Length: 214
Image (cartoon, rainbow, N blue to C red; front, side, top):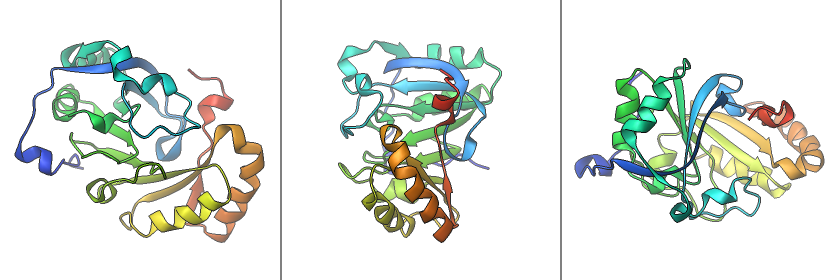
């Protein structure tokens, strides 16, 4: 499968040799379609969405985190055996990602993106997980490229809201409902009932938190 390409940004490419990075780590993907697979994570700093239930609020301010060269990130990723590299945040699309994804592909990695979709798409991705937020809607160009739609459900209204996004993503997009961690005991029964009534949806449970995987 060819990597998904950015659109407008390809017409006027911008070189970024350094990016603000909150952390990198080697772990398992705990959510969604690729749950349980080993992956190297690059968590970029900076977010303008600001979900009140975010569990990495320390990633929001890019100025608080050091910039790292793309070459050093690719070298670190190359040191781990997993093929998957996941670029997350924060909101990673605040940054121009063409050079980073190209560098990761050059060392044979498969590159995934986790995004709210609220900023223009850049980079060349093999898998895009779109997790739209009510605070700042995703852009049509990102919606059109989504391989996976992940709705974080905080209350019952989020389940109805999920069906609105289902109508906008590609027909073959994988659909996931994930309980907000602090509300999981309250909302999980409603999610299960919803999925039973709408079997095209699946459950994502953040298994890395249950298993205490870093």
